[in-house]
Length: 318
Image (cartoon, rainbow, N blue to C red):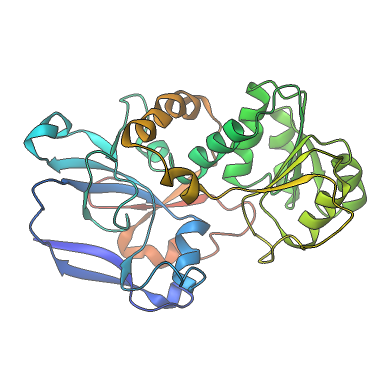
């Protein structure tokens, strides 16, 4: 048998560094699950390592992709109950491949009521949103969320409302996001109106910021004393400007890798006991399914505002 995988053997722009390769399928280590992949989304977090931004902790050659869903086709005897079941094969090898072997203690079973295209996206953004809201509770708080058209920010906003936030304000870039935000009860402000953004930040108790750079720095400076400014992304490509004596809020940083590092397998699986019901009722962005053979189409314009989320489809999953 052969395994088809999107591999990068050097750092560089993802469309150039990634190659679709057919490799011999190695024998399954007896203690691992073998998963036949069905779907895997394309996220910024999948592509950034390919550029070399994390060269201090990842080294090619590597299969790309951090999340997705697949069917268990082989399992050790102790985990035979997973045979034929859908799982999220997470925190192991790259998911952009037709077959992968994963630790059964870290594989997350998918409930029958969760569609595959939803399950495939149930890790990077939903779990980050849940962990941040657990770390910085928002009940009765005014919550400010930047890049509110992105998946993670959108989930943060939805779940902040359901968690009892008194007010949720979303900062958006593309005008097309405004109606959907308003429909969810989110006060929407365009990023280009920075005077309005900073005036709103002056009453924010918690900000979840995915922008960094100058807009993040201005929001941080405008926030009141003892508020929490949580950095979890750098869509501007720049960090929040350091060393500003006018900042009164607490500048926090969230890295999911660090949050997961100290979890036991039981704690890890328990995250999904809470997360699956949340995902089942969440409003998620539309997707466009792309066959693995046409992976270049999935990368083309994936980060343009208003574009649907590309999802790679493997084998006969479509």
